[in-house]
Length: 323
Ligand code: UDP
Image (cartoon, rainbow, N blue to C red):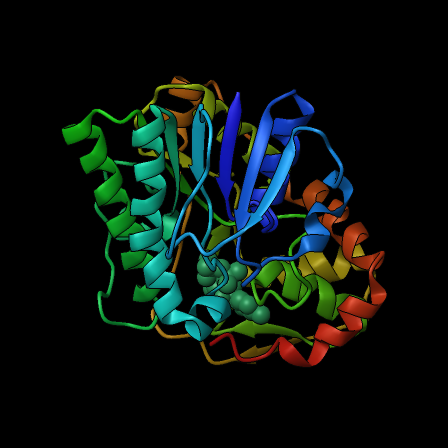
């Protein structure tokens, strides 16, 4: 297959490109480098099936030749990133999604949207099933991401309904692993870097809010299964293991053997209280489930960051304050 991946140089995107190339697909990666890095793709440089095009997909998407699948993964995804780039986040969720959908429509390709558990907002239903419509503050600081993704789902569903495009919507829950940036600002990369530096771990609020963390290799298997299917979704992808941030901090301190302590900071506005995917649909329709438990995934992630001490040290001062 020839597959176009927007955001292909980002954390998730680079793993997707790699996985598709490994199985023999041709991949065209579109990226504007705004929250990604060419370094994520360095090991794929020179691969005969791989092309990288620098472009902002909110402005234009021009890909010549046949396309079998389009995967739209371009967007800031870390809260500090989308707070810093609110208008760009809205643009890539709206105009960017439309541009990518047009490419899929024109070429007769399968289209897969990277949506998010954030569309559930601060959920009133737990665990979250795909039937739940969500609880989002449409004007709060997180809305630039949440509502952009909600619009992206709406326009994707409309293309499927009115134009017959072969669309699929994935709702991706918190994901972690190698190639997250040290200064990304999301909780696992922050806690791991802080622990490796011997700095206090910055726990927001009382640390009793929960998240469910999926290791990137598990997630990418689910994404590829979605690309290969004709499943319209939405389909939740995530690991149902649910942890408080205090539990996560203790586990990271334990696994790194760090002398770090935990320090409490104000909770960001509209920070969801709890989150856990119901993955029944992913299992039934895609034959997917995650295998890598948090402890094992953390060990691999810690090893990744431990091999980049300069980056980890440089990130230390940037990791307080969330938004
Ligand atoms: N969080 C934290 N310390 C940090 C970064 C995040 O306690 O240094 C908390 C954050 O408030 C949230 C949870 O960890 O409750 C997950 O945050 P993240 O930004 O990783 O993802 P999201 O909020 O998008 O689920």
